[in-house]
Length: 232
Ligand SMILES: C[S@@+](CC[C@H](N)C(=O)[O-])C[C@H]1O[C@@H](n2cnc3c(N)ncnc32)[C@H](O)[C@@H]1O
Image (cartoon, rainbow, N blue to C red; front, side):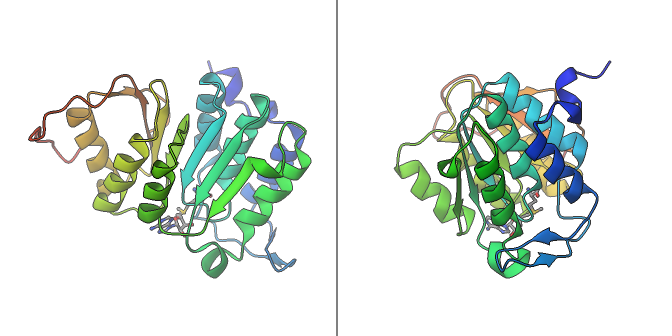
């Protein structure tokens, strides 16, 4: 039996309306004030989005972080979770928002935080940089994030770096979610984490394409710790 929080009908009106239009592939408003066609692959699915929303609601997140904004599908689900929880802030990192995505993700996020009653213009920040320097800078500020969604550059080493840096800002009880487990690169990161990061425990999401972990401890590995891991 599906969880009630997995039903898109639970989303508040501005999120439901925007996501319905986006998932239908309708042209979306860009930062130039015009509508642009969107491709049909750069997105999380509705099931994955509702899973992110549910994880965010169940964990009562107030501060969320994301690598990879693009058109803003995942951002809209995460903002919906913050709204459902009574407010909070979402930070998205993406160096190519203007060049590759016509500013659609940014425009959509601003429209949502302006419309949703529990959110404000301070509820969304875009860091228009590569994730590696951006995550290091964020970590230096001492900020923590209750949920981090990693969906940026999908190479094994880039994703492992994203996770390693995001983990430093993940409090005990916080969540980190990887997208695109169908790719060997992401599955290999998940396999490494399962066998090497005992400070994170895997959570069953019901979504094969998502890998989610919860921080359960400090990182207590020795300097030379390494457990060999299979690809999947
Ligand atoms: C698959 S898309 C993200 C889709 C988005 N999560 C959604 O559901 O709508 C991947 C995104 O990662 C961004 N990206 C690529 N390299 C990156 C990097 N080094 N750091 C941060 N973002 C990056 C791309 O510009 C693109 O927007």
